[in-house]
Image 1 (cartoon, rainbow, N blue to C red):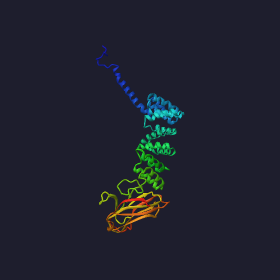
Image 2: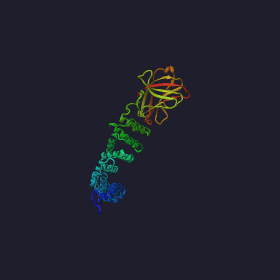
Image 3: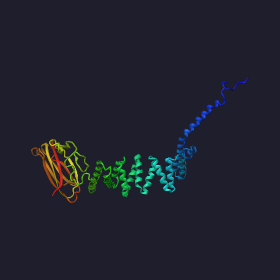
Image 4: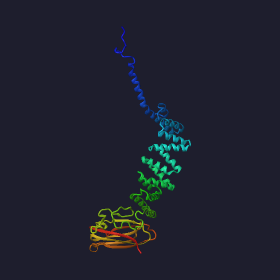
Amino acid sequence: MAESDAPGSGKPSGLTGLWPVALAAGLIWLGWQVMLVPISTFAPPEHAVRLAPGSADVLSHAAEAEAMAGDMEDAAYLARLALSRAPFDVEALRVLALAESDAGREDQADQLMTLAGNWSLRDNVAHGWLVESRLRQGNYASAFAHADTLIRRRADLRPQVFNLFSTAAEMDPAAGAYLLGELAESPPWRGEYLRSLYKRPNGIQLLASLAVGLEKTSAPFSDSELEALYTALYEGRQIAGLKTVRAALDRPAADALLVNGAFADEPAVRPFGWDLGVGPGIAVAMLNDDRKPELTALRVIHDGRNQQPLATQTLTLGPGTYRLTGQQRLENGSGRTQFAWEVQCVGATDILGERRFDLDMAAQAEWSSFDVRFTVPGSGCEAQTLRLVPRNTGRRTAIVVWFSQLSLVTAR
């Protein structure tokens, strides 16, 4: 009698024996689908499209590759296919915009690229294209905004964009106004941009213009930024420009012939304000007088040997006669060492005026007044240097001397 194939007979059916084969085939198909997109990504465009004709990513990458190869017609076709499957594909939209521009349809290209830029702040190509396009249109606000998006992410692009900013501002005052607007937002690249102007021909003039323009905004030049500008103008002997910028900003007050003559401990924007000496054998500081705490003064400790200036300030006096007054007292010391306040023209050796003090403990133990007159010539003396210097040094000793209430006025 033949064996029965009925259920429960213990013999597997033909259908049941096929399920391992079906499972294996399914796993192979699934693995192929998983590997299909990565393989398509690295394959040449023509092969990638054949492998995954329905993938928007593959189509957009292929469109990008065709655009880079210069075949804008195929690039546009592939980009449209990608967008039909993924309407928000930024790469495909950008390629289509480039293709429209290549075909001379600039309005359509501009609209498409604007969409690409708005959809992705990370698409450097789109924002770079938009910067160039907006500049051609004279739309500085949009051009600078897209440029700001670029250089916030790409520090390597900053030199080129900085040059674009500066060139546009130098050629068109309207561009300068929009550049001021960008800098007034205190972007993270502001300091780097301002420093780059010191290496640019005529960059100092642009810096001066930016300093004046930003003064009325919420982000004026900081003391350090202004000090760098003042110092560059001073060291470049552009004294007229230095006076003009200072007068426009009133930092420090333009009508102050001498800054901080009371020696209050306050920040200085050099070369205006005091530059105190630092070195072996000396200690110079602005302090409250130990006898009159309400009085601020300059306290000098000197070893009788160091010859360097102890306090220096740049002046920008016009031609005329002036009177320097102040107070001084000797706390400790004796000997042949002297101290002197002197004024001379920058770059010259002749002293315009000088007031010396001997170390006489009996005569100067209390505060006493002093004054000196000097005349600034009509030419060759656009800037002057006021400084406190030691004289007749050589023998080591311990000296402590105070100065306060310096004042500089026009003399009748």
